[in-house]
Structures are given as C-alpha cells and as structure tokens.
Length: 330
Image: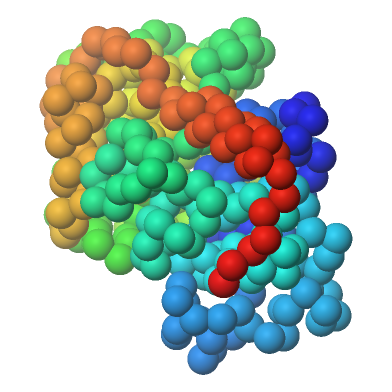
C-alpha cells in the first residue's frame, strides 16, 4: 500500500462497466477502497456533468454517498460521477486527489488526473491515454485463473473460444437478421474449426438472441453461464484460445484484449464514429478480426493500461505531497 493513500473511494452511479474500471485501478494501487454509488434525481441529472450534485446527497445529508471523512483519493467514472468528484474536491479543501476515468465532458479541470481512450479527443498535461480501458484482469491474475480448476470449462476440448455477448445499446440494435448471423457464425466456427465455446450473455442481450444462443449451446455441448453462482468471466478470459465479442461494448473488447488472444468482433446494426476509431486502432495492432469468419489464433502483447494509470496516480500524488498542502481554488 502506498503511504500517500490511506483511503480511497470508487464513485459511480453503479454502471457495471464504469465501476469495474475504477475498481481495477484501485486494486492496482493496492489500497483499501470503498464503493460509493451516487443516485442523483432529475432535474439534477439533466445538468450533469456540468451542474451540481443532488443536494439530497450532499456530504451532511442522511445516508449521503459522499459523507466525510473524505478519503485521500477518489476514482470516479461516468457523467453522473463528475459533479461528485468536483464537490468532494472542494469540500475536502483540496486535500482529496481526484481521478476521472473517461472524458468528463467538462474539460481537463474536472479532476486532478484524467484517463481517456485514445479515440477520444481530450488532451492535456493531466490527461492519460491508451488504446483500451483499465480493467481488473491483470496478467498475473489471468495466469492464476488459468491454473484454477473450473470443471465445466476444463471439460471442453481445445480450441476453446470465449463468447462475450452484449446487446442493444444507445448506438447498436440487434435485428432479427443480426441474431441469425451471429448464431450462424458460431455454428460455422464449430463445424469448420472445431471450436468449443464458453459463453456469457448480458442483461442487455435481446430475448431473441439469448434464446438462439442458449439453444445452440445446449444442442452442441458448449458452456453457457446461466447467471447463477459467481461470474466466470475471468475464467473464460484466462482459458480462452480465442474470443468472439460483440461490438456494442468497448469495455468487453478491452477486457478481451487483456488476454493477448485473437478477438473476433461481431457488428450488429448501428455504430458510432468513436467506436469505429477504437476498433480501427485495435485492427492496426492486429488484435481484432471479423466475425463471422474463420478462427484466428494469432497473439499480441496483452493490453492493460491499469498499471500505467496507477503509477501515474502515485507519481502525481507524490509530487503534490512534495509541494505541500495546496489551497483549493474553485
């Protein structure tokens, strides 16, 4: 544990992807942390990230998610978390060091340190960038999980392919044709490449796709997590020879890229220029391949910016400590 960081909060509105990124960085710092979830109401949410926090969640309010004593470090992510980072910074008299993961959409003054993916345009002296996002799947953790028995997965013959199925999102919608193409792609990889699949679905997975994938898995003896017990995602990543991931989630693709194994990306209807730029970078690095398509087993350097972000936080906090306490200026 760093002597500079005795306490840490992870602040999000509870979105799994945002929270996982923040926890990954906190774990890389090897510091004790608390998860603090904010739940602002309308109309305050309408003005976020530029507006104030919901006064119902102010530090002195009952059951406030940001009640003092304030920590040495706050790591936040998501539009709704940004005002809370700003508020804690001010309420602590500038003593709390703030970190924002993803573009805060309010400029570089939103936090002491900011990380954004390379495909986002925000740049500044306190802005870090990398092709993929921080996550919880470090190389040592994946190595450990690879050696940890999981009877249902270990029973599958190689090549084992992890299948991470997302779903409808703000930018993508799975049409009936998309659902058919996706399952047909799995069938082709099974028939032609003798792949055996380890499958997880998302809460966003449309019913039509979920039903078709379940039927395919059951008929052909593949592993599909039924949602009970612990989430086996780490085991899937660690034990995969390759992966299939849907393009609606950059987080899922980023976690898949931690493996160093070929990622086959399925594109449902829709898209966004930022996602296109993200995938373009990974394509140039030789990380992704089209799906449906033949199974690839190429490898690359695992992508994990989490240690870099953790090191930058330690360095910035050390430099600030060397300058002495600074008075907060709003």
